[in-house]
Amino acid sequence: MKAFPNRLRLLSLLILLFALFLIAKLYAVQIISGEDFKIKAEHQYVAGVNYFDRGSIFFTTKDGALVPAATVKLGFILYINPGIIIEYNAIEETYEKLNAIIPLDKEIYLAKVAKTSDPYEELARRLTAENADRIRILNIPGVGVTRERWRTYPGEKMAAHAVGLVGFAPTGAELSGRYGLERQYEKVLSRAGDDVFINFFAEIFSNIKQVVDDEASLDGDIATTIEPSVQAFLEGEIAKVNNQYASDFTGGIVIDPMTGEIRAMALTPAFDPNFPQNESNAAVFRNKLVEDRYEMGSIVKAMTMASALDAGAVTARTTYNDPGCMTLNTKTFCNYDGKSHGTNISMQEVLNQSLNTGVAFAVSRMGTRKFEDYMLRFGLEGVTGIDLPNEGKSLVSNLKTHRDLEAAQASFGQGIALTPITAVRAFSALANGGTLITPHLAREVRYKLGPSKSIGYPTAEEGERVISKESSAELSRMLTEVVDTSLRYGQMSLPNYSIAAKTGTAQIANPAGGGYYQDRFLHSFFGYFPSYEPKFLIFLFTYYPKEVQYASETLTDAFFNTTKFLINYYAIPPDRVTAPRRASI
Image (cartoon, rainbow, N blue to C red):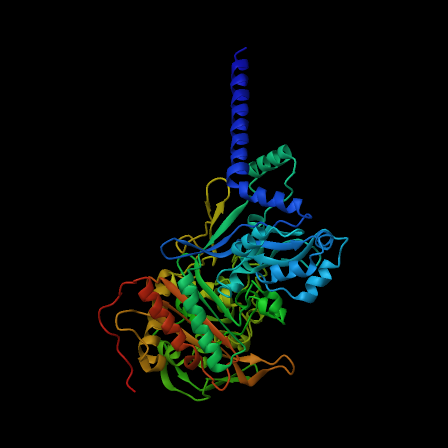
């Protein structure tokens, strides 16, 4: 008998919860989504025009304000009932009145008026509210306007490869996310149940399932980590590089190496997702920063040196005799200039002068198997887990041959091909104390009903360790000296800020005849600042710049312009009070 009151209380509680849910649902239908349902009903009344709805994507400013990156816009459709216009014998009069408000092609208008068996023919879409009101006031028989909604991208080309676009699938008639975040978060952004007369109770129980099932989709918006001012600045810098050197394409990423939050992701040429039909080549929609892989060249030397330091194979003061060229497994490779740079060359000088033979020496001190182990620790073999579709995998099979030649070539960034986002994650480990982070673009899901949900990713303190904090700090010190003394003879260093950086120049592989082009290069550049507790890491690359050979020529200015912008925009305090020493010229 004692169990009966408990069961009664439980039943009463369940009934109360269900009643509260019904009230919440009615509030959502009548208040939150009332205007949406009104438009849906209007569209069903007018010839069953499709209704469109979708969650929004937002950029996030440094102050936390949300800026629309992808949203739904409200406008109007101008339509006619040809039979009524002909019945009133008002073909010319109707055209003249409408054309005075909305310029219309008369031949198209006459062709549509001739379709007397069709009660609904569209003359124009996406009218402004002002023009729709002007047409309504005329009260022309057989003419009407109805509201419509469509996907719009207020920033136009801004962050287009990251945001993506909505389009029709090749095999279906429904609009859905086709690229970028639009596709990655389709389940959150899409809106189901467009039928106004959907069974109300069926929808209720469907939503109950969503509440209790973590795997089910819930309607929401996406707030990203992309900062619009940073994105705009980066896009301007890579556009200048691409235009000045007539590169095939140029890209860049600005990331917080401690958290993995991407502040900017830019690629040019870009596209306007408002008008994807204007693009003649579908390849422009491909996000080369995430999907494609490249031999990165000398920026990989930073990973090689960090591995050798952590393995105890070398120190910054370890020296070797530079032969200029080396022959391993019957094949010869050389320094960038083909020359010897002397005897007793330190590992610091290897980075300063970017000597291929020097990092090959460091690998020889480690051994090929330990070198492979360290490089794979940086996550080069798998994917980063970035929240974008179609992430590509790097090609690092040459690390597994354990032949001296392939290991030496990999040490200076040839013979292995990395996706840019994989390289960015690896370089972030160099910068943040030695751990892997997950690069990502979404910060928060803002649900239509219920609380917002932060999207949690491991920070540098929680990530998988690759190298020790001490090795990370020493590598950062060495890369800082590269900037202070060697990059353009030290003329790019900033008096009050430590900056760690490395350039890379790689020959582009010739897919036709094997080997490499002698006159085609991929230039890359990465750096972070402040050097020891970095706020930002910047990665830049440009593919096949014309009539220029080295990345120090093409990307240095873009890197430091972006660095100075970030320092000023975020008011980053100086981290050193004495000016760095500069190399004599």
